[in-house]
Length: 140
Length: 140
DNA sequence: GTCAAAATGGAGCCTTGGCTACATCTCTAA
DNA sequence: TTAGAGATGTAGCCAAGGCTCCATTTTGAC
Ligand SMILES: [Mn+2]
Ligand SMILES: [Mn+2]
Ligand SMILES: [Mn+2]
Ligand SMILES: [Mn+2]
Image (cartoon, rainbow over all chains, first blue to last red; front, side, top):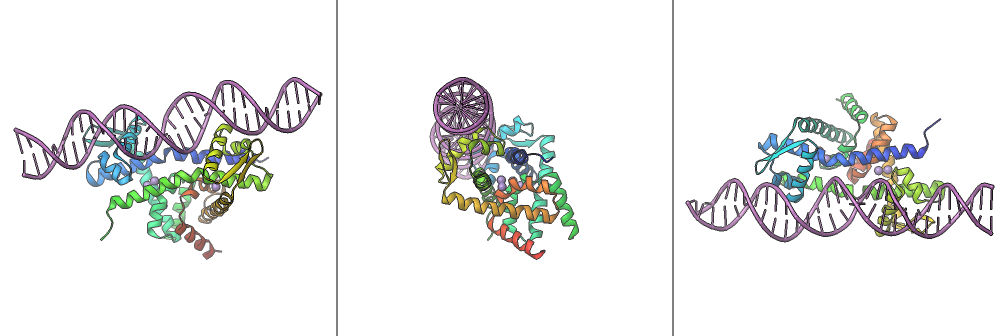
């Protein structure tokens, strides 16, 4: 006996909602890791400028990162990632690249691939990531 | 001269934020169209059950659809789509199928493809959709 | 060294999208 | 015909994620 249609569908929507709720945190840790690596520090103003939001919004979200145990901040000295934050950043960065590479391999123009990946990346499950890897290996 | 890095990146994040803000409306019109076609009517309770949210949440979002000119509702008689709503539903349905088909073609298992597509679909640009079509035609 | 500009932080507002609790309407089965 | 069940709608709560405005701290130019 198959699961009722509405339960299957509700579970799919539920997964998408839960992915959406972590999407912003993922973007922040990825960006902070990038700034730390490339600029040596991650200041709220830089984070805000890269994201295209006000500095007040960036500061508020950073405090959500702190609550979530992903980051720390020393006042007027920038934002840092905890071990947990670093680990998440690493995973997110890898996933981001994989999504872009698959889009490119399918024939999506570079800038579209980069822009769309910024949203798509947050909704790609483990099983899908594995399929993406196999797909890219298969055409290497 | 290239655009500064932060402006390019800010524009990508901005696009993702704007896509996110319409994602829920897209899911609702797609689902309402589906219910109207398959069940003859779209009641708030059915919408809520399919989405996995409370009926109060569904009713509130339907009123956002009304404000956006996508739907109408007769109290105790269900929800209907405006022309604009129908048009959006059509586009969304087509896009949803295309995303699932591409994921399947790449080797993503069926249920993962369906679940991930529920989120991914909202972040796929026109250029990417066209690339998806070409990709599928090329391997037909 | 001073002081103005820039960065930082916080308060307070709005919308969205969840929820529960409760009131009212509709419809069906007895 | 009517009671009760189920559907619908309203009110009010919360967190997230935007924003502007303002106060304070730091930094850099002179
Ligand atoms: Mn992203
Ligand atoms: Mn990313
Ligand atoms: Mn969807
Ligand atoms: Mn869909």
